Image (tube, rainbow, N blue to C red; front, side, top):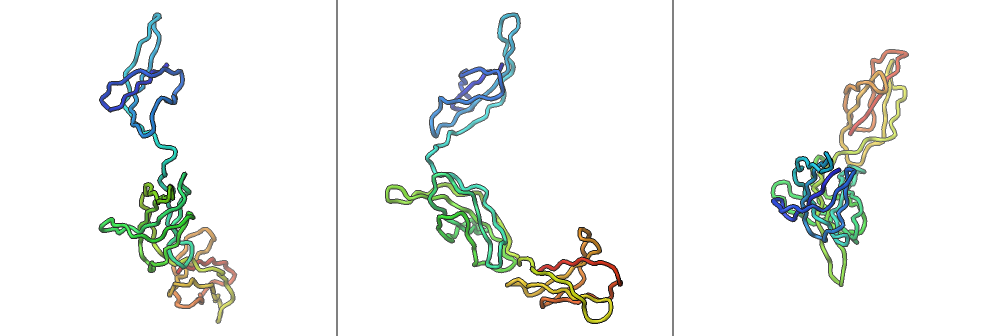
Length: 231
């Protein structure tokens, strides 16, 4: 069996509240907003009397308010398209909206970007190569006033060109040559071309192109080659 002790400060005093035969216990005699400290000890009956073991180190928990605004979770910053960085997050309980902030990396100051009811936002005011940090805050409108909840942990992302699409390989000019073409991304000015001799092999850089095509010459006749292009 295990004994459960509870206190309202880490130093105690700790009071016995229950004993259980398993390894979990639910304490329902707590108040919203209260912080409680717990210790657990093992107990065994020997010759008709209980013998208690050493108490565990205290652990604490603050009882959350089920009606309070919650911290937005799972905030991500991604390159979803060429418009900018997309910030997304999971919906927070009790929230009717969110505020997205950009965080100054040097000072930690927050810059308001947008208030919205959805769970994603595209920051288009970024340049290629920029690394940006964001936070999201939950809000709601109650009694004709806005209530502001806690902000999320900071999430970071870098704005990079998206991958070229519609990659094709056709016969090229001259002998033992192929021409690689692709659909360029909207914000890239240069493309790298890499080649491998197997689909899942190591791709080696073979050249760069300022346009949406590249000719690879001097290839071995009858051999299969694989290509990748990046912006």
